[in-house]
Length: 180
Image 1 (tube, one colour):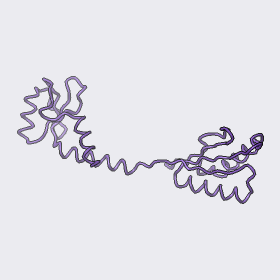
Image 2 (cartoon, rainbow, N blue to C red):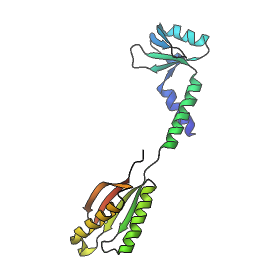
Image 3 (cartoon, rainbow, N blue to C red):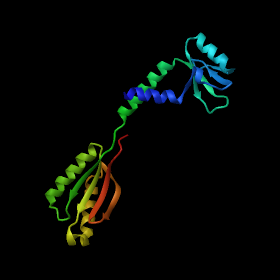
Image 4 (cartoon, one colour):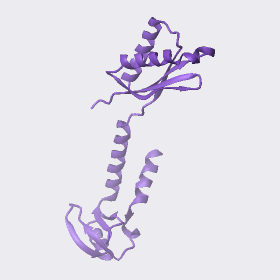
């Protein structure tokens, strides 16, 4: 089903054979050789003689550029390229790690390991410190905690959003270091 919709979008973009309505076109052969400016009727006749399609490649040019090609094969190769491109893309997800300002050292190390693992998997990490009640007045403790986390994961992650207070929570966003 998705494949059919994709082919339809390609077909909508390009005019083929009888749908080309201009008087003259700049014609390119199936081997890539320029045949010059010819009338549309002449171009259609050449395409019919070679039993291939006349495809309008660049409609905005003056005169429009048309190419002689096997349109079915072109659509198939185009959809194959699009599928391969979709396979190679990776969606980056946002994961969240929450903690309190009075966290113990061992618990903090466990959270840092979790952040490290998430960054290595290629996800962005939102580190949130939850303040309750009067703890909001001790934002320096939260700032220091987030700074320590950023230092610990410096090799595999970068700070995308510096620590800032949002209501009763302090938030920092870490992104994985891009691998080239």
